[in-house]
Length: 361
Image 1 (cartoon, rainbow, N blue to C red):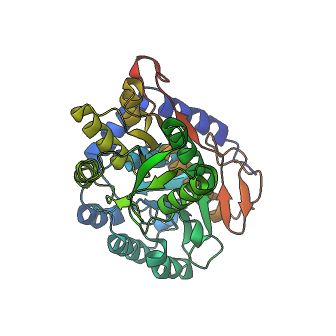
Image 2 (cartoon, rainbow, N blue to C red):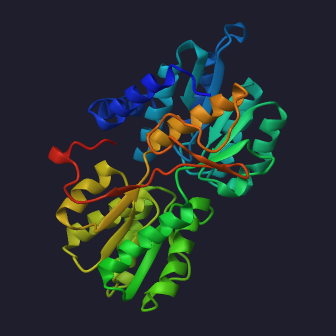
Image 3 (tube, one colour):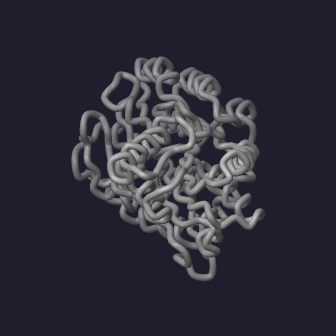
């Protein structure tokens, strides 16, 4: 079932992500990143001519301008390069984490008549009507980080990098180890409507209740930061002021982790154990210094690449079944169940993991 050119594409992709080209690609994506309005207004001109035979696949992230989705864009861009004239793949996202802005972008893409949309929803339920509309218009829809949409009329498939409950349990197990199995902790997510963030948090809390009953959350719900650095920093200051005896901090957003770590470092606080989502380039210095105990991730470039590969396979009429290869590490042999395609792409980040601070992303 595999396109015979794709193993070479995969090799190039790995070189991009794990070598110095990753930094250059991220720099390019930063330079190209504009406002939602500017991007949407120019995107129609990038669509291949109807007679060219090329597919147009557009990825819509939660928000543009943050490191996670800049890294995802490198995967989308590399996929487009690897497919040559066969595919025009690009990324267009809102300038703030706003489901309504994602809806407007998708409405514009429906009007343009793109062939496929890959979307990382801010609020899967809020996007259900417009995604269903896209599919009714004959557009292939692939979601990422939206397991609730799997098997519904809103998407062809939902792609997950791993089992979300396992990812959350792992995050909280690391937190429990660092805290000696007791004490108070607090969590922070990008949004309470972010399905995967809340899945990690809720699975982790349930795991602690069963295995570490002496660990207690200080709030009923996690804090939320909108994946915004300024909000995450304000939250960090508020949390440390409100809970001076806090033992642990779990972050489901990269912004939450980096800003809490920065504040802990500034204040010289060493009593708060940190475990959560991050990027190697963000977590690396804090892991090396001991401010962060543990961090985990999946490669956002890989998710972008694999999701676009899946979209192309659907467009080409290929069978989506257990064992197919989406041409990126962690997605070489996926499982397919009830509309969900799942890889095994968990990355554990540890201190001094990357020599000479050469971070892959």
